[in-house]
Length: 101
Image 1 (cartoon, rainbow, N blue to C red):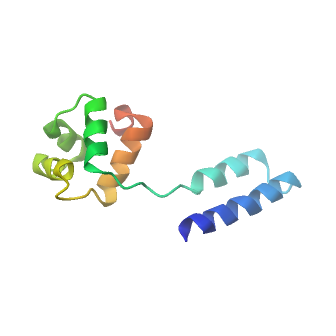
Image 2: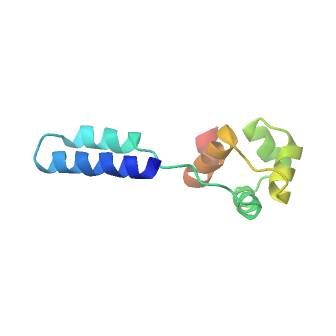
């Protein structure tokens, strides 16, 4: 449902831009507001992201301000990252570790 609403809004705004009622700056601002859904992370994907940045489980836990056992449970599939942790994984994957520092 969320995607269809965002798509509908963007379609309308693009049409308004085409006829000159929305300028480029406003268009960019609206595009930035229509943030896509944060993906789910499988245990394999979490390990891949962590290894990409050459982090131990303890180091990733420190960056996210969580316990190392939580990272271990994610990677074993016992628990799934949720909320802020899922968003941090998304940011880290898309923009790099530096974006979190």
